Each structure stands twice: as structure tokens, then as C-alpha cells.
Amino acid sequence: MVHQITNGIKVSVETHFEGTFYNKEVIQFAFSYVVKIKNERENPVQLLSRTWHICDALNSKEKVEGDGVVGNQPIIQPNESYVYNSGCTLKSPFGSMKGNYTMVDLSINETFKANIPTFRLSTEFAQN
Image (cartoon, rainbow, N blue to C red):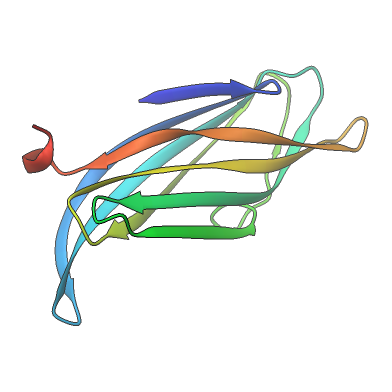
């Protein structure tokens, strides 16, 4: 599990390899991840959007942007957390993801970024 605190928001990520499958005769490696977002600020915040940078071992890079996470734009009270599960596929047995959330401090209506730390996506057989 990796952690990072930015602007009073602690983001923790844990990953799991889910298996392989074929998509149009091309092997895909499926990964899931659990993200915990903890509000360590004094005011409630809302997660508005996210940006992901995904890279695999073949140097394939993808940028994914969108509103909220898994269909939600959660409000997180001080000292509380929001946890969600998601996933991605790669064309190689390992890679990495990183990014950021755009948040708003609801008490002062100020937007800010919270970094998502770089985390590895790796199959068990490719870890050495």
C-alpha cells in the first residue's frame, strides 16, 4: 500500500492482480485497486474530478479524466474517509498509475488538487 498527503488529503492505494483475458486476440492483464481518501483538513471537502496517468511496461501511456470517482462526487467530512474500488487493464504484466483529484473546500469554496501517489500494477510472476 502506498500513501501520500497533499493539501491535507491523505490518499492510500492498494492493488491486486485479477488475472488475464484475451480481447480481440490480444492478451490483457487485469488489475483492481482500492483507494482510501482521508480528509485531514478542518473543513469538509468534496471530490469533483480525477485525472489518471497510466503507463505499462511497453511504454504505452494513457490519460483518463472525468467527473468524480465510480459515479460519485463524495463529500468527505473532517477526519473521515471515502473508500472505493476500481480497476484497469494493461497490455503488459506490469505498469504504474498516478494522478490527482480536484477537490473543493466547502467552507471557503476554494478548489485545490490532491495527488494520487504513483503505485505499481504487477502480476505475481513478473515481480522479480
